Image (cartoon, rainbow, N blue to C red; front, side, top):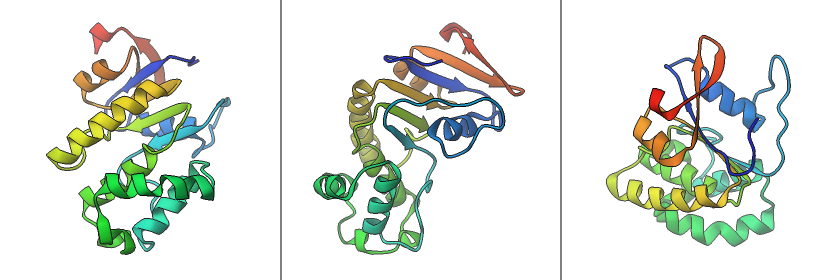
Length: 185
């Protein structure tokens, strides 16, 4: 159970289910047992390429991803200049995403996800993506976004980043989820 003000770090070995849990929390997957109750707008920053269609242009993907986040056309249009500026992709936004480098795709995905005003933010291992300049820019934007949301959930292997951004911690191990003290990470 998560409440307003919670910032949660998810830890566990590769394959433990961190990404699956985040996707279930977001409503991408349906739980095989039990239920997930979400109250408020959810934004996700998942691994590179999640939610993007490689044959569509950057602009088409911006609109598509924003609509998946529940943002209407008018709001997307209002946010477009900020997204364009943040990505620094310029004319590449007219090209299919399949022509992008990994860093370019990360910029696009992160710009869309971080341009929202969600109540709940779910992040999966995104903080180390992109070049050094983008990492600094993304960190600044992410700090502002994290401080504005009601609930933040972050899955990562980077213990320092988890401790910097989270106050509660859950470990996934052999299908079990248990809350742990920060000192046990």
